[in-house]
Amino acid sequence: MTNEEILSSFSCVLGDILGDDSVKLAMETKREDVAGWDSFSYVTFIAAVEIELGVKFKIAEVESFENVGAIVAATRKMLS
Image (tube, rainbow, N blue to C red):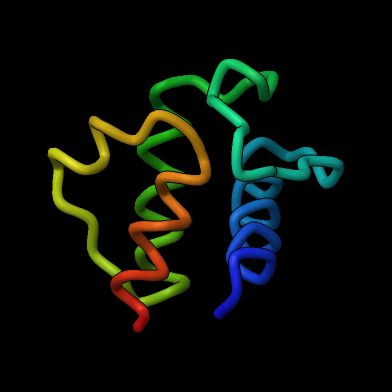
């Protein structure tokens, strides 16, 4: 998967969680950039991504992701 494909998938997942189809994530997007993306919805988002893409993040990774690009990079590493 390309970064763009992963971003598209992430945007759909987060949009479903937040009930907002207009969510469009970019590599530099941080949680505080998206209205309603709080710590609870972040955990829900990570779990949904793991299920949808068949990946499994380590807890330390989840706590260290600074932006969406870091999640994309970790996801691509697991998918390759």
